[in-house]
Image 1 (cartoon, rainbow, N blue to C red):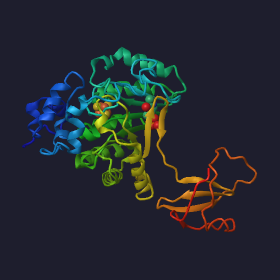
Image 2 (image 1 turned 90 degrees about the vertical axis):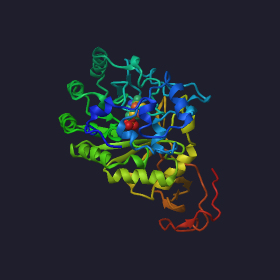
Image 3 (image 1 turned 120 degrees about the horizontal axis):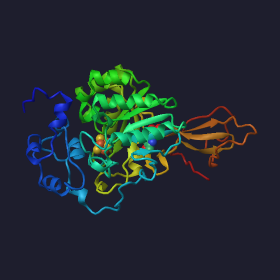
Image 4 (image 1 turned 180 degrees about the vertical axis):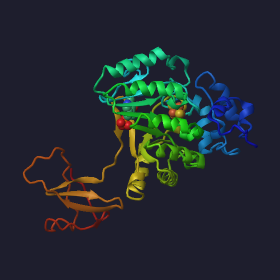
Length: 396
Ligand SMILES: *Cc1c(COP(=O)(O)O)cnc(C)c1O
Ligand code: SF4
């Protein structure tokens, strides 16, 4: 396919998004299931793909990890264990429209409901692409008034939808108003555009962000196929503008729930100077059951990363709940054995570390465990490696 001369103009990309069968056929050979799903989901969840992101799809493989994220499938219509559309009770946590105040010191501010593409697993499926959740200027003003009236809020996450679908004039208006509120220390952007429309990261945008520092940005890569030279260039521009770039990945069955893919993703991200920040357990959202994978699978992936790649390539695996994000950690600390703490190494060995407790009552109570054989008789301060397999039992 020859590319339009305006291909790398982000506005051209937005105007030429794929949202009908004929245009889709320029990129892939759609399956009957995909064609049926495009019809069936029409009134349920919007469908749009930027030409750039569409060009990353495998034309012949419907299970392509890029294609599955953006082309509807009939599984979206399957009976689900949930009809839940707002699993985090974000509406209940919004004192004013689209402003989610769940943590004391920081908020998520959904400044728009629009995105460049509509990810089929989206957490905010209930609102993205929906005209009712668009923000008029007076509604943005009400949210800004709330922020100004709440001095405990020091960190504002602009999200959506995608805040970078705003043009520079609107973004500039918003950033200036936020910067006029003295207690707001950090402005964060949550944007998928470095992944789905990297041409959006223009010099003008970078200059605008630079003028409102400290500005952080979290983007959303899910698969190594998305780590293209164009995406790398967008992330490099942000880094050069002094914007720390992080990444949030959603763990999805058949897309990134195997160790080789996840390792290639996080290592590719750090090579682009993007810090893997969160790995999310997929939420309970109607029509997304086919994307969900078990929490144990996610924990096993984390075991495969921690200690086996650069420490800063290892994200935190979390589940978001109405009570905030909960780390899904499987602990390396087995428990306390007298004056030692028994640990399991990232390679599977046991280690007993002398614990300088004295007469203190520790702030956390560890379960009591037996010292593994071979360590019990050692003098304090001379721990030794013992293979896990050698008859280790927990008593607590
Ligand atoms: C995730 C989230 C934040 C930011 O949380 P961090 O753990 O600080 O990244 C803030 N508000 C809401 C409602 C969120 O969901
Ligand atoms: S870019 Fe983010 S908010 Fe928009 S559809 Fe995708 S996951 Fe949802």
